[in-house]
Length: 268
Image 1 (cartoon, rainbow, N blue to C red):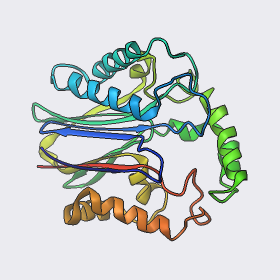
Image 2 (cartoon, rainbow, N blue to C red):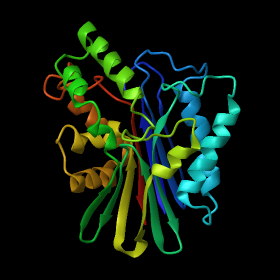
Image 3 (tube, helix red, strand yellow):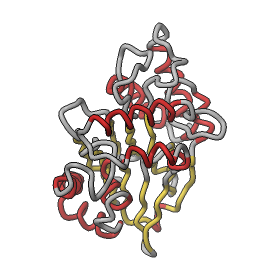
């Protein structure tokens, strides 16, 4: 498996995405925005995703380790790195997870929250994602979408939304992300696909997949054509060009003008 990667921040703030790849593994994490609210942790989201990503990569390098089991192990290891922080804070640093691993003629996938794994097969495209987050607090989501980005009203609406969203995070009836509690690994979506039927795959954060899922400015076959022509950098450049036509979020209401964007493109 040949993996090419790129990641880029959405603005001037530090990038809260993380990506890594090996000849058998691709991992993308997308750190959840804190919206300027307290997290109970002195380290921050970039610190969290880098520690979680490196430990997840190490755990899953052993093909005998189940994907969910490797995530649970990595979550426990990172929690042990900062026990003096308030890991029970509902805003504790957290991330989405998207993984693709090649093993014994199969491609195993794991997703937690809305960073997708997309498989291009001979008969079409298969998108694996976890959209439970979209089912919570639709009224507050709609309130955010009323306002243009970069306005005080938008910032305040985002903070109200994130404050309420935290109460539905990693609890029954809500949605699940990688945070401090290894129990989150019990709620991942996993599966396997025969490798022989897959031509290419993309593992993305939603700051890159939004070209299809949010903006509707490309189809998945067009995304794979972009990736083959110019690699992950070309895909992220295209996302940024689209966003530049709507910097205030009028056409495509969103939480920020540009989100951190990450792509791992896998070919055989």
